[in-house]
Length: 227
Image (cartoon, rainbow, N blue to C red; front, side, top):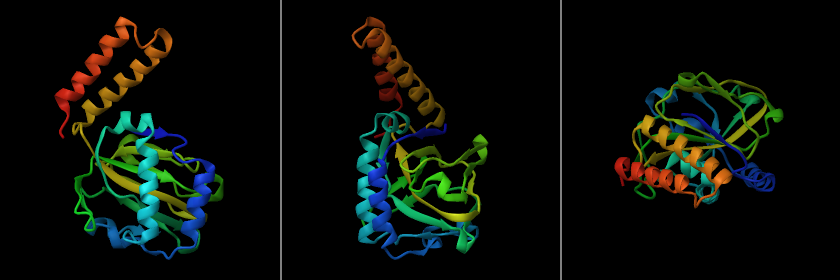
């Protein structure tokens, strides 16, 4: 399941993020890569333990967890502290085909999660750079979204970032562990929730059919959830 969600950050918020990030020090992106990923990863990132990365990361999480569509698609149990990367044409930056590590640990907080879903939050406008598409091979999707939009996709997917040939691609990226471990179950629950919201808009939330389906939705989460 691949879900694109618009306007997680406003244009004003994106501009503020970029102003802060542009003034910060960057490091080789391979510092957080696994053994296989490090061989094909060529980019820069904000040091994960820096005050800038942590503060901006908290703002990203706050924005995401206030977004109903994100909560519906992810049903998050734990969210890894967001990281921030930059792919610059001058550095020939790209990220070859890889799969994300199954488990991620944060030594500052002691958080340890199973990576069910990967998140990319775009912080540069598509017209500001060439290349830099997120290619998710399992779903045959190429993703390049406006700044402030984000995409959510299975961490088990083989994926890559194509070479940036002009400008710079700037983004936040991270992972989460969902309460619903099974991908197909999570997808069905998301589809059900979307249908319920559409039905509620047309016939009302207090209609018996809406109430019954809402009960089924919560009971399915109760059945499948791991907390």
